[in-house]
Image 1 (cartoon, helix red, strand yellow):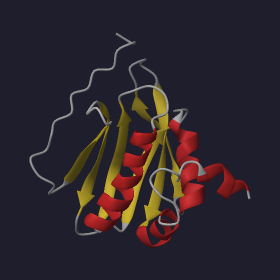
Image 2 (cartoon, helix red, strand yellow):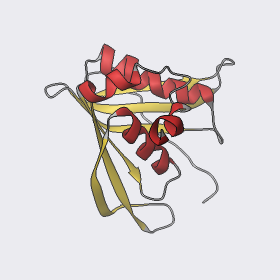
Image 3 (cartoon, helix red, strand yellow):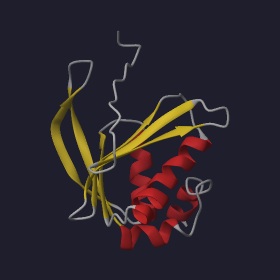
Length: 157
């Protein structure tokens, strides 16, 4: 069963401690899911998750990710700090590193052997942190459809 990923994602009845948003295309096909746990006292979003259900690059999924961070977490819910992670070696790790370098986040550290995957092996988890006062002004210099294209240009030059 290694070739098939099955998801069981319970939908929360309200936003008291978790945000959940889906990404859909123009034909209403499900592209992915964004969610995070909330600590309303510290205005922190933890365990930020982005799951893409399709293969390959999707401009709409990427735009929805931008909107989830900027419009939903930073603006609507007034989140001041975002904490997220990636499994070391995941293809998304390089993208997360570039996003942090360009848009004001930082790599906090790596926990060794933190998660066991379907293959039965233990993997390291890299943690990131982004604060609204550092990140949002940089994100507002771009938009939902060009923030990724700015990564290489803005980092290198």
